[in-house]
Image (cartoon, rainbow, N blue to C red; front, side, top):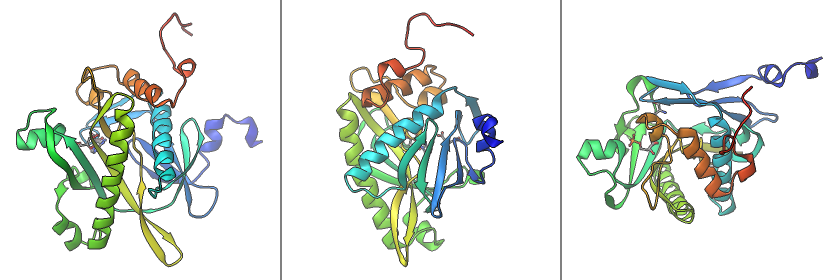
Length: 264
Ligand code: AIR
Ligand code: ASP
């Protein structure tokens, strides 16, 4: 009588493959697929700061779906297949390369701190950085030398990852500029997708205000996770604004969008 149980109970029966800070991966309906579930958890500083922000997972799922679909459309290979429901998407199972690939256009965050740059200064050119994905070590920055010496990725794979990162940066910069948003920096993860004996590097994980710095072009307002990291408040409103500008949610779908509400 499974159908009588609440949906959440049924879903918990699925085999959980991996649980991260903001997402859970479940076994997919077919071999080679997984279900990526977006949680409402917001974490920062390696989860030393943690809060549940109701509705965040719905927004990151929808925004990431939109961006990955657009990337698929222009021929950038990604793990994304399709969105399944408000919080979940069907993805291809890939072997995640243990690197956080950060692309920066404007000085902010750890780069501004490390090199003493003024936040908001345009960089001479886009810069790619690699961080070793390891929570115990706080995701330390690493060079290509470390990556190849420790075998996290081969030199050709690093070239593929960098080419992918630049394409994503160019595409996202234009996409966001078109809706009045400046793409300051972002983080992506890549994976190896095996098709028979062939392997190619594809974009994995998510792209959302959790993984990008997004500033309003006119006001420089932060429309991303820095609202949470820096205790600025209004995180869900900022994510909703990004979704609204991208046309991902319609005005009538937006919760708490002004006007009186029934309190239950
Ligand atoms: N990032 C890095 N680790 C996790 C995330 N989400 C993203 C940040 C920011 C960029 O990578 O959201 O967009 C650079 O972060 P930082 O802290 O190194 O300046
Ligand atoms: N999400 C990571 C954490 O939990 C890093 C960050 O986005 O600040 O620490």
